Amino acid sequence: MEKHSLAELSETEQRLVREAVAARQSAYAPYSGFKVGAALLDEKGVIHSSCNIEGADYTLTTHAEMGAINAMVRSGVLRLKRMAVAVQAKTGWAMPCGLCRQKIREFAAGPDVEVLGVNLDEAGNIREIYASTLEELLPYSFGPEHL
Ligand code: THU
Ligand code: ZN
Picture 1: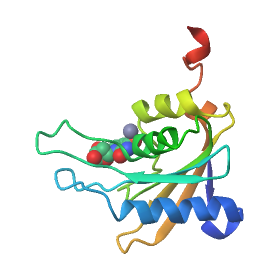
Picture 2: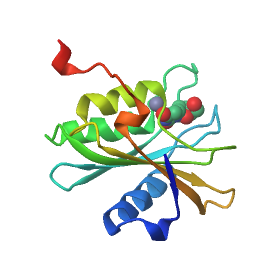
Picture 3: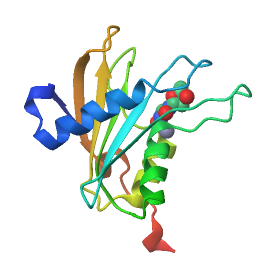
């Protein structure tokens, strides 16, 4: 995993990061207080984004990454090339949870798909960005081709 500033990223990566940060503004997370935004670039070059949406029962939660993937599938595209996830993590990096990693795996264009973990400070400014590949996040993974 590599640590970057926004300026070090390519134009496409920066756009994705900004879309993830913007999507986070719509997060509905009154129970955890932990807002997440995700934006992905599909294989046709279109960006899809979403945020986490919680429920009063505490289990009815849609993760931001899953929402973005659902939007991509709804649009008729099944492969994603990159994803950015924006959070305000208390410490360390900010990467998709295990469930989301598996869902990214289902629709990733390949193991080298890039995942950008964007960590915001209390004011909402970008503090640091961690870059990783799906392969690094989910090694020896299970996927559709194994069935
Ligand atoms: N969350 C996400 O949206 N994505 C992840 O991969 C990690 C967790 C959300 C779920 C819940 O609304 C809040 O973050 C705290 O777990
Ligand atoms: Zn998740």
